[in-house]
Length: 249
Image 1 (spheres, rainbow, N blue to C red):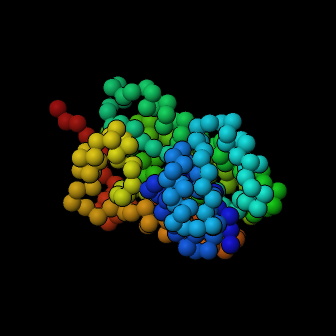
Image 2 (tube, helix red, strand yellow; image 1 turned 60 degrees about the vertical axis):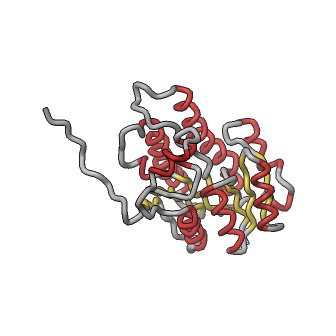
C-alpha cells in the first residue's frame, strides 16, 4: 500500500485517480479547492481517502501542506500533480491576460511548488514517484493554444530535468501527456461554463476518458522500482498530429 497525494481531485482526472488507486489498495490524499466534492468522494471511497482543501496557487499553503498532514499520512510515496486548466481559445492578440496568468499560476507555479514541498522527503528516503499531468498541447501547437501549450511544454521539460537531478536515485518521474479526453470539466472550464460549446468538442468521436488516464497512472505506479518511464503520449484513435499549416496567396 502506498500513500498517494493527488492535486485537483474534485472532478475529472483527479477523481478518477482517487477511485482507481483506492481500488488498487492504496491510500489517497485528495486535494482541491471544492471541499464538498472531496468529502463526497471520501464518503464514496471510505477511510483510505483523506479529503483536504488545498489551492495549489497558494504558495504558503502548499509549502506548509506536508507537515500539516496527520502523522500517519505524512510519508507521501506518490505525488500526482494533476491540478491544471485551460482558459479560452482566442488568438493571442485577443486573449485575456488574466487567463494567461491563471494558467501559469496553476499549471506551472502550482506544480513546481507542490513538487518542491514533497520532493525532499522522497530524496531522504531514496524512494518515490512523481506523475505530472502534461498534454499533447505541449508538443503540437494549435490555434488558441498559446499559453496553455506553453505551460504543458514546461511540464515536459521540468519532468525531464527532475530526472537529470535525480539520476541514481530511486525516484521516478513521468510526464503523462494525453490528447483529447472527454468526461471531465476541461472544455467546460476552457469555455467559461458554455456546456454546448464544450460538448461540441467531442461530438461524433470517442475520446479518451479520465478512467483511461487513471489506468495509465495505476500501471506506472506498479512498475519495478528501477524502471522509469520518462513520458507517455497518448491519444484516442480518432486523433492524430496534423500537417503543417500553410497559408497560400
